[in-house]
Image (cartoon, rainbow, N blue to C red; front, side, top):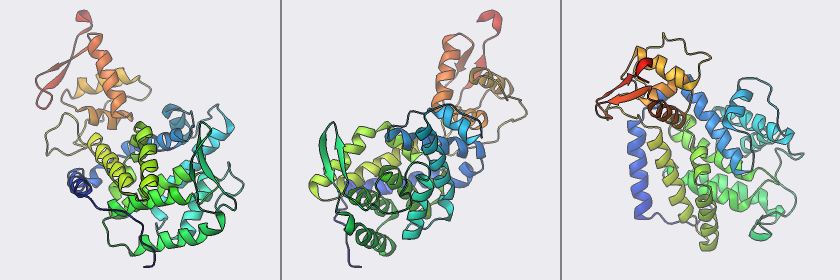
Length: 337
């Protein structure tokens, strides 16, 4: 192995690797995969997040409509970006992270309708500019092929934990900036791919959505790694995001050892209902449902469910009886609302 990216495995990084490994063990991949609706919703959150980082303004609801095959009005480029991201993420299970041809193919899918040179390494100089200030000058174009060959060779041979190698690859990829456009979304896509080779759970987790929620910290970690000529700050950031994502996707209001997707009475017809009405219909059938279980059945993310529950409580239509872990929901009759 000729190339060795510079990074240091600190005690904080080791602690995060241990914490994430424990979280992965608790959050059963088969349970997540057993819910197609949850998997779909997380994929939509992933696509919304990774494109929003690049300035795409389409909402989660609009992207859901596109995924469902509905016509959506919007900026032509932004719509094309969504379709490209859908195609690239759909292809993930069939790609190999250490294969350059797969990387180029994924970029071709991601940027098919927005970039003439989609699927090709850049042939000109590029840099990252913000507010007229140059933040990063990428290596010369004639070095890109060699640098990417070295990086993928290192990835294939590295003995480090995939949590670390995926983070290092992500940073090194952004440093090289191998494409004329789409580098940010491709770096995030490829880290997800590397992680999914370690554990398929990561194909169902919206890491990119959490990165979007921490966008400024993401940029700062990249810049700090540039300044130190060492990817350690970026490794720490990405591992923190992974830990946060796993925590957010853990069961809510459920015993520690309860399955993520415990059996839910799905005989209730919630099609076409508003989120608040769907929640009431589900709870009338089963008042001990968790927020996560409601999100899985209704097909909304857990934050949307939480906001809807708060509105129902504020409107006097729903109340919680007992503790968060052992209590239940009680629907307030209309004459008391």
